[in-house]
Image 1 (cartoon, rainbow, N blue to C red):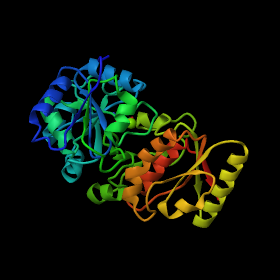
Image 2 (cartoon, helix red, strand yellow):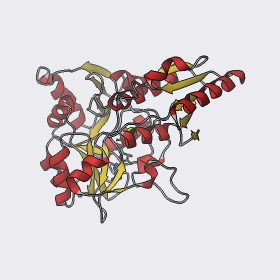
Image 3 (tube, rainbow, N blue to C red):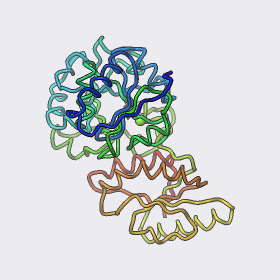
Length: 352
Ligand code: AMP
Ligand code: MG
């Protein structure tokens, strides 16, 4: 474990080339560097070194059967990481890279099993964030990078979130400001007969089908996996994105949702518990007796996606006992927002 964690601020990678070089060297030589991406902050290590992946799992407290996404700086790198690159992969890469899209392919022998959680497939993404791309280029190797949070906690969208979870456990944190999107990448598995959406993200199912036709959808995206089955993205089976307090989603017609939450808040109060409410900004004034956290306007799905994880962390800091959240959504991002809220609440939904 490193003695301490160095924190550096980089907004323009070109202006700070020597710092990027230094961070790249730490990665190449097996160290761990957290860095900004357009989705959330990533915890990077050299994807080709089993020891780096082992260190990533240790720092996050992540189960080692949960594979890591490998980040690259140029599409060509796919050919050394994947045993075969189907045309569909190149089509999706052409449409969505650089950007928040992860592709699952059969892995080549260059990728150690430690990086892929023992699977014979590999997840690959080419991020668009300029700091991330410059860092991967400087490292000169593909970078395995899961979200830079402690396992189970909400994904980090600022360098401060990374400091909260990983300070003292990794070599360096690059602060590049707030993540633009705030939700993790869309994951598409291309190793089966048909392409399958394993995790919804900023790139919507509709955007994907416009490019490659229909995709299958892992049923665990919106429902508790059936007994005896596991989600296809191993990471989706773990309790995830969860705040410290127990969280319940309330879903249904707007006015009924507000009424139900008011009732739940007052019941919690009479049990002597400290309740919190997560809601759209339009409803901020509706819940007396609770700590109220707005995730943004109900009309602005990008803002909701951008703020959700951050708000979950704020509820932790406020030390509340129980959280009631309006089930939020949107259009393009509906599946991604609902999936993250369901997982944060452990799929506990009160329908009204
Ligand atoms: P994170 O990087 O923290 O956003 O988590 C990575 C996600 O990608 C987890 O849900 C993993 O289970 C999933 N993933 C990574 N590699 C694979 C793979 N080879 N097959 C299926 N899912 C994967
Ligand atoms: Mg994660």
